[in-house]
Length: 194
Image (cartoon, rainbow, N blue to C red; front, side, top):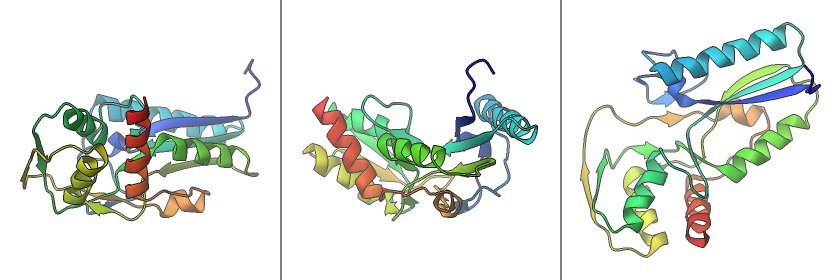
């Protein structure tokens, strides 16, 4: 390696799990029919694991949930916030399900820096999320409150149901998760200041 890097952090995705049929996803949850994106992420994780096993140094694969920060897109919270700011009506599924499938980018960066500074790392793979799950109904309410917009939302039940993400492995690696409320609040503040 010409750069002489001794550590690699690979930003993977919860998409590696494909169709999720469990109430809580952990690193032991089996993958079911991931799409091309999820399979590509899984294959890259496997390749990194092989490199570390062969003696490269240290590696960490982070399976990211909806990652939010200024300008973020293509995830539930980011896309819903854009619709709310545009005063468009939104349709939300499974309002009484609980949600922690979010990480604020600053919290992610703090975890990466802490992991890079820790000794004896080898290879690890972990999911990330936020702690203290909120119902989807309360998440949507928070988005409206923080943006000072009138609620224009229709709730309905649908399949598949949402799932939670276990934080046990991430916490064991030094991750200090924000609450869902904090992650959403920090994201909205960053977006509105932009």
